[in-house]
Length: 206
Ligand SMILES: [Fe+2]
Ligand SMILES: [Fe+2]
Image (cartoon, rainbow, N blue to C red; front, side, top):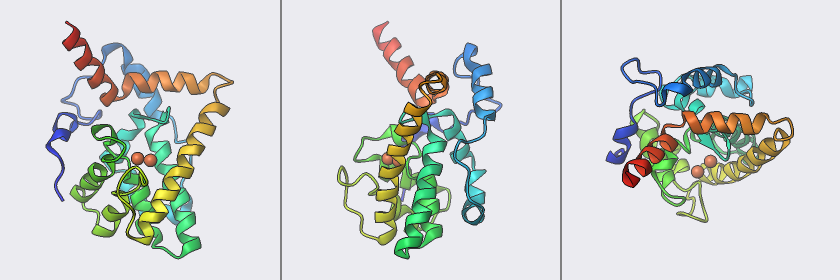
């Protein structure tokens, strides 16, 4: 499976010392945002199966990205946790489900609702994930994309829907204190895909 060439402009990490910050006035906010722990802890049993991914640059970058108005890493962790629980109930491969859950929306902004599963699977393949994990990622947007063909793919499809609802619930719950909106604003400033889109729009208007 090959990574689409469209990913190339976004390959550089925020932590890459050769790359300048996206916007000079947002760097302090970005740093504080990145240092904040995830709002969704990983259970010890699952952690042993995904420990390497939790420290992988591809996953770490999602701390700076927005997804359903929350940090993308929180959405990925929620999906992985729900997938882990569902996989246990339906006797699917828990390791495959947890790893697919952590990677299922990587670089999702490069595709549409129906195609970003294939893009995330390409990235997963590129960083060494096996076919079972990639096959579980591709159809996670069903019914907006292809139908799942494996038990693990069905688990990710369901877990992603539940996690998306939980994201929204979490956002609304913390909107009353203002923390959701504050975090959303920081994420919009740090998300390289949002910033890239903004810069493209500005250069077209100029
Ligand atoms: Fe998705
Ligand atoms: Fe998702």
